[in-house]
Amino acid sequence: MQWAFLLLLAGLCSLSRAQYDEDPHWWFHYLRSQQSTYYDPYDPYPYEPYEPYPYGVEEGPAYAYGSPPPPEPRDCPQECDCPPNFPTAMYCDNRNLKYLPFVPSRMKYVYFQNNQISSIQEGVFDNATGLLWIALHGNQITSDKVGRKIFSKLRHLERLYLDHNNLTRMPGPLPRSLRELHLDHNQISRVPNNALEGLENLTALYLQHNDIQEVGSAMKGLRSLILLDLSYNHLRKVPDGLPSALEQLYLEHNNVYSVPDSYFRGSPKLLYVRLSHNSLTNNGLATNTFNSSSLLELDLSYNQLQKIPPVNTNLENLYLQGNRINDPSTKNQHSKPSKNVPCSQSCSCDFQPLEGSISLCTIRAFSENF
Ligand SMILES: *[C@@H]1O[C@H](CO)[C@@H](O)[C@H](O)[C@H]1NC(C)=O
Ligand SMILES: *[C@@H]1O[C@H](CO)[C@@H](O)[C@H](O)[C@H]1NC(C)=O
Ligand SMILES: *[C@@H]1O[C@H](CO)[C@@H](O)[C@H](O)[C@H]1NC(C)=O
Ligand SMILES: *[C@@H]1O[C@H](CO)[C@@H](O)[C@H](O)[C@H]1NC(C)=O
Image (cartoon, rainbow, N blue to C red; front, side, top):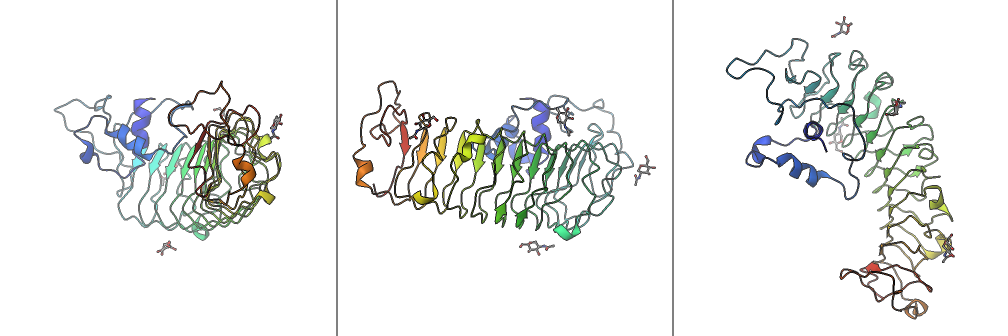
């Protein structure tokens, strides 16, 4: 992990440095507390040379001690801060802004989060074609007030934060350079098949807490996608086809009642699947639906299952609480795990859902009524 990059990320949060001033590792604690369970967006991807952060801990100020700091450059909008020693960043967050100021052409990182902005007017980013990050989360942006061509010209944009707004539609067209797209906590109801077309570098897509009822084949072509979060929506069906590089799929808190046979075969790297709090029944599952060799964790808790579905032999964690599993034939399969399975103390190793040499070891909170 690189210091400057972490500090750059810290610009996204609305934290006051002061509360952490005693602790030289404040940023680390902050990021730790913000991280999702598994995905570490900061590690695996090499980013371009990092810009020094304005409040650089290691870099030191760009001007000599004792002399007055240089004045802010004149192109900086008066509502914002443009630190002289970080000429490509502009900070306009947390200041009750109602409109977006025009962004000067030298900017690469712009922070507008936590204001009362309701529109993204055409033209605001027209000069800033080198933008890499745009943070607009925590505003009141509505879909009708997002200019049609607003993002398509930003051919280097890698991160777009539009979460916690009032969007009802997918924004677009989006630049093909995007790597992270944050659209969670809006009121988006549909993901059209072409909404994400051509986003060949997109690695993480956050759409949780929306009103999405259906996702057609929009995800299929996202060949770099490793994280897809569609939890807390109104999906009755799983998306048509999963991206081939996918590792993490979050679909909990929807109304999914079935998953097609071989559904996960198209994603041979899939590690984590969460389907808790849905409407799955055994009738909606084919024999081999979850028999996918890459899966390490599968959460099927709080569904309508009456039998334990077959799973692969490498699975490490299976969650089944909150179902209706009370089948004597599964009880009879109680047996010791095969000898080559290392059972740690945290494992409950006294249960084997499948005949044969399954190495399924950890079954946590197996079933309330088992
Ligand atoms: C946008 O860029 C052009 C060309 O560099 C410049 O003439 C113009 O003043 C800029 N607009 C604003 C509002 O900064
Ligand atoms: C955005 O949604 C919030 C909460 O639902 C609401 O209070 C606010 O008025 C909405 N803003 C706009 C501009 O629609
Ligand atoms: C995707 O990423 C690669 C490698 O970083 C880059 O060369 C390529 O231009 C990117 N594609 C787009 C459409 O930006
Ligand atoms: C799971 O898949 C493997 C490999 O495709 C197959 O050999 C095995 O029989 C399947 N298990 C069940 C219970 O169908």
